[in-house]
Length: 248
Length: 343
Image (cartoon, rainbow over all chains, first blue to last red; front, side, top):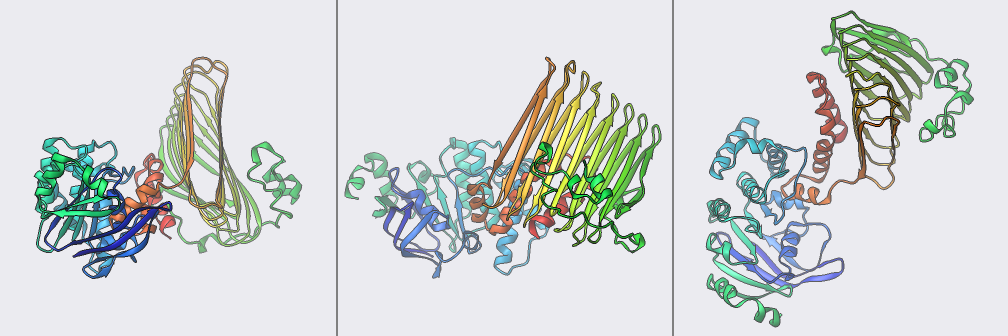
């Protein structure tokens, strides 16, 4: 599904990713763990096409299609979704309006018919109930005045509504108490399927108790320096990142 | 010296210009070398419908300076009037309209400025007088042509207990000034003066207001928001004077602008002059760009860049539109904005 090879990327002429390679096949969940400053957030922004993140070498494909040539919204229409570490507040735009605009823009880009208002509302009510989101909250401006946990839940709600193929979760557990974490993880796990893949970016192992990865990669110094099974996350939790940071 | 006398005498030296403090950002004298000849009379029956016709009890048309000159509301009467100020061609014209709303009368004025591609010079003077406990909402949709020069000057006289609420929305003109001067008597009279400007290309709009609180217990709320792109220029001048003894005045003024291009310009001059002791007054003025982080967030969810910009801009302006009281007019205003942001 997602294939990253020898990716180099710079922010303001400073090279952050230095030859990162990664394969995430359909149906799998991979975790990326690493110390602060390793390039975890840079990776998520490069994959989604944020301006200011310049790719200087390497290749990224989704199902064989070159992602780097596409605009951020075109990547989204291909099914790439990033759950932000710090979701933005969008004053004046009700959450439902925002999500419906996004969903229909994606469908239009894929040549699919737009979703009608009643169809959309029906879907939104069902997904909100699953994620224990008060439906009235969706009528308020997106994320404005929401708590950290509510914002993260709103990310997962958007994910459920947009039904992406490739999900990137950037530090999704930060700011969540244990109950909110469980709801968010349930929401993510509900999206696991043989034709989807996920990249879970996290500093701590805690999230991986709830979202079980098939593989764990260690990102240090802008490259993947180790890959293993779920046990690797436990080892990192016990022993820290020191030995990998030194190796990088 | 005034726009009206310049049109009457065809003497360009009578036009206000940058040497006049109140007009320094809207220089008409430097722009107009020769005052155009008087505009031709228009066949009103040949005009298309105005934007608010369907909402009004009466439709009054002032075409190239000619037509209806008075709106009257009897004590306790309530009505909705569409007032269309139509300009066509390359001539000059001026009109004077008086509005008298007697005790406890209610009036909604749905006013539109409708220009064509001509290089007209148009002046409209409105004298509004509100009796005790009268309530007026004035909604102005200014859709001038790109070559037109328009000056609209409203003078509002409030009696105690009166309510006057105004929302002016404009897409500018070659040069345009929409001015409102209010004599506020205090005495629990309530004033709202809002504005929206959406300017593109080389258009110019000037929203100027002056409010004088003359006695105790008056309230004024002002909120103006605007967007400029390309080489457009917006001017906001808001002045609130609280006269000596006008205690317990509560006045708030806000002006917030988005600049979407390097070559666009916003000039703002908020002024509070306070001569009374016990007042609550505040003003806020900000000029900025669209939030790049919010734009990326919207695009990551699949919204194309142009649509993301329109959505965020619409939301920014929406705060002002939401304050329009007349529901159907509010929706027309919202649609008018949507068309201009996506057009």
